[in-house]
Image 1: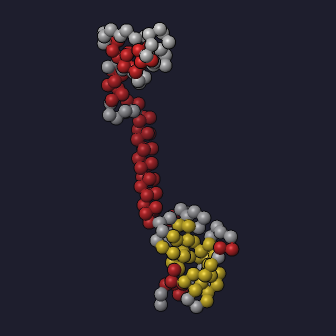
Image 2: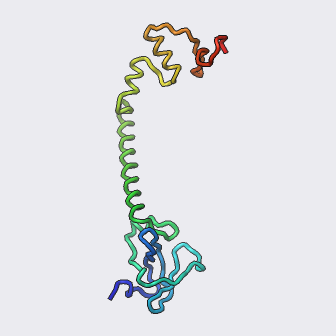
Image 3: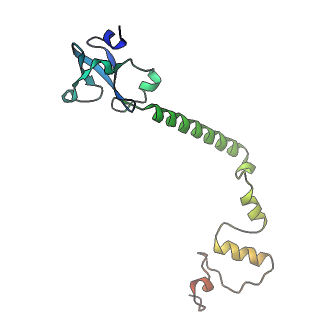
Length: 158
């Protein structure tokens, strides 16, 4: 006896149209090899008759909680959600470690090396500051927004 024959009126189950289209339904009526189903979260006007061999058992509560308006995520979507959750957890763990150890804020050490060389994070302004700190002559006046008279194309102080 196939599994789909065991379902009766009032049972909640899954209507599987394809692996990507699985819906939580309640069986309203049964007529031979067809069942009238009501889709969770939808108006009764969307109820429809489906083949009973499309009926599948309900998945675990964990998967049911991921349904949106009665539609279950596909296996690929579930795998992506799990991977995204794992990556978010790793990022949160790294953030906690960095908060506990401020010296680890830049794991590659590039920011620390630039600051040790006298460079700042101000783009062109930082480049000019670095050059002047190393004893090189810099003729271009530097304005607070990082624009110099040379980069602006004028020499009148703009």
